[in-house]
Amino acid sequence: MQGFLSNNWNGFGTPFGMGFLFGIGGIFMLAAIAWTIYWKGRALWLAAKKNERGWFIALLIINTFGILEILYIYIFSKKESDKKE
Image (cartoon, rainbow, N blue to C red; front, top):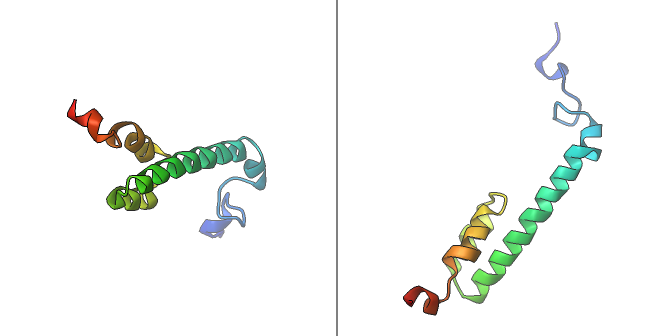
């Protein structure tokens, strides 16, 4: 009788072989990491510059492929003069 982990699993904890990491999956993974780092860094920089601690902490903790960061940059970080108009 074979154990659960011996069926279709390699020693790296994934159902994919090592070729996945160096093929299209690896390229997608690197692109997703670069995308997330860019938006997170930009949003954290803006929140710190505007002294918004609550947003800074939320952006630092929540990781959603940059969705929260993009929303903060384009929607929630409007200048006070923009909001009053």
